[in-house]
Length: 453
Image 1 (tube, one colour):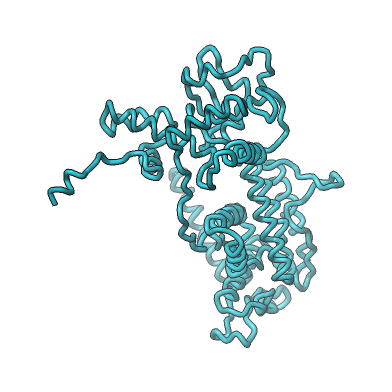
Image 2: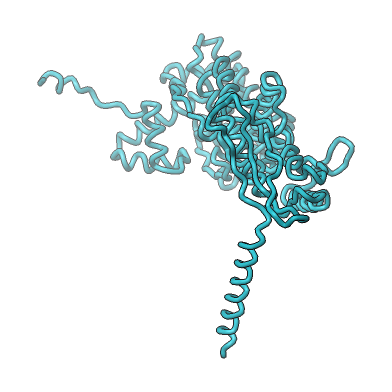
């Protein structure tokens, strides 16, 4: 008989023995939820049976209530119990036994989790320099090993800290700071409004909705949506790492918002601003020219270092919105205005508050805010411009100008194809949407058509 056939017979025999042993000696029943037929005045819980080592029979274990009965709606209570049920199933599968002391098993899993966390994210240090464990350590007693393990899941603070540590390697400083700010705001809200909620498993959809409603009350729908997205991103990390069962935040609806509009400058106003800044603020003027002539965003201009400019090839490389390193040519109209950079440290930032080429210890957000405030003080206040005009308006203005000039000598598709290379939009769809949003293309006078109606 061939080795293959022998292996099949051996495996089939083992499978039969295993199936027989499983059916005859199953250690526990699958956990179930008791919901009192929907009666919220009664106690809801998760229950299961485990084989008693002394009698050899399945014995009903003390039901697990947790904090489920604190919740006053059926959906919230069922959601919490579903989390408990899932956790109990996982613990039983991994070998937790309510009739035994599970301390040794628990500690082994903690040591394994710490090793994985150190390998993937680096060791996180506490203020005393000790390694910080990724989960709360607890010791299970013989009588309540599974229950205490479920209760002692990560706190909300520990869970978000875990997610932030993972995100630290994947996002830029500005985005990470936004995640930290939003998670801290949520934690403060929970402490103030739900003081009994400690564990991340206790956090519910209704609590987060309550939090987001407060954000909306004090801010715009756009801000509320941004907060929702950032919290959901962190919760998704927790779901993927099995710290929570399900990221319910992603199912919270996104509110409709009116798109932000930045007015384009008229040709006369644009010319007046440039002439005014030539004497008043040359640093701000060149800053604006990079936005206008190279179609860069203000935050991208802040990132420019002297070494990013290739004087021989007349190009500039910078970190764009899509997080890739982008290289663009510097048109002659801008290149001739760039000061001599030959003796300046390549690591120096091109734009600083006082000079071209120097050190500037500030976050990207703070740099952007600085130039926005400088523009308001120097330009907007002088020309009495309202809130619809800003630094970003120069990008809209010059893309509009360029597109209209291209349309004079080419078809719409040809004009957009050439424009796409210049502006750096990743797709034609994105460019076309952008052009629609800023009203770059206007129809010719249609008076003659109206006369025929």
